[in-house]
Length: 613
Image 1 (cartoon, rainbow, N blue to C red):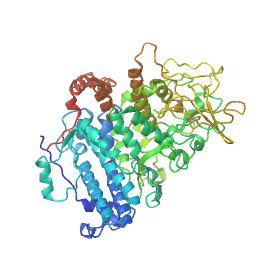
Image 2: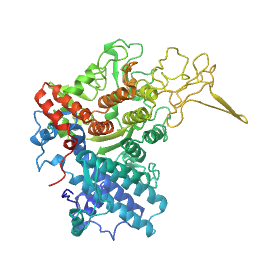
Image 3: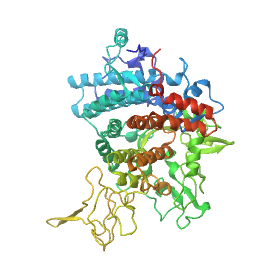
Image 4: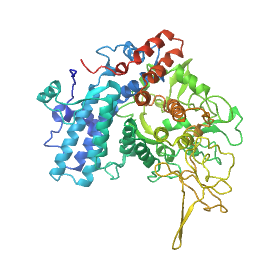
């Protein structure tokens, strides 16, 4: 077994100081003033402080997370300001022993904190210091966060020790050296994590006011890991595609106090007010009746990265963490800003070329998620400043009038990624046409029964419908007393989508299905549908489309490396990952590096970073 050296931080210090990070003064307490186990974990308030402490420490991983997941892949590149550490990562060279970006210790330190919290929560429950009702969501949260951290380690390091007990003594470290903890490869790790997560006692989101509330001006509803989303991800990695789709679908149909027709549905904008950002629902296109006018562009898609607190915002974001201007300024300005930072990272030429090559529904070229400027000076994922491409997702909140504040967010999961994960699972589960509709312009535009429009193309539909002369699905009618309920006789859960919107003369009359506003991943940025030829292998071609669309939609958000690794492992095709990354070098004419990187990454062991000293 490999000799593995891991450095764990002081558990109590890291948790209890950060657990109270809402108060600036407490960030400056000396270690001697920190509470001990005997003084802490007394009641639910201490338990909440411990949970907040975990997330207070988690946000420190944000820059490393983004660099490992994006710079190693094909959508991000170094700049002329980048040092040799970043270049080693971007160029897939042997990394220096002191390269700070590849050090796994911060991940393991937080894992150890999670282990300590989980252990102490169990003790609190045994000693009746916390009720089971309060215990279950909190311990499940800590287990989920630990699982996500291990997931990241496996994706980047290939095989890592799986430790679920708190390492608090020097003697405990010797157990690692002696190999008393299992070292799991990526497939083994994903299977173990799935079993762990399926067994947690609580899979929902927090509902009690002590953790579901506003702190420092931000609501916590998006700050904690979404356990159903994590379960969907783990089922994807394990090849359980119906189960993955079920978890993602469960999230897609939440309402949580917001409009069920909008939340997590990628809905169309209000055409009665096409120039109003508040009714945009993060869609991009043209002013109403001006679809052929380049001077009438409305690019509201990127507003999700600078918005906060609106119905649109909570209809998009699932997991996002905040850098508070008073306590912890955003580190992303130094990484990305050309004018107010060190400008160390930029979009790759490959993704810029890809965005520029997309075809819109009106046959114009260009992707609104790239750098198309609208009448309000909004742009997509990057901007050209001083002749240099600048990633803007992370620095969109910059205020010229308050240049030192540097607020920002760490983007993790949102409706766009949720849909792309769902369509990946649905496609692999055999629901190719359904996946195609959600990837493109939505269910309503493509399934019979959604409207009376003729001309739908069902070439790749793998289900049959009983329809009437108008092409509408024939619904079963169930009468219970005076109540009449209509339901669709199409696909079973989790592939059932009701996108009907009817008039008084239609059946059922004046009906609005949950999905009648959904316009798909490409539809909400007004792109034309992707075409699958009659002789194409549908599953593989559609999966290629999904991964390419994920690049355009989620660029720089920390998803890309995992996507490439997952698909390469699933297909048993090392060349899938190797070719994608080599294309980044080819896009700038560096064919020598492209050849070297392609040859290196054709060997799976070379995908992973070293974890030994």
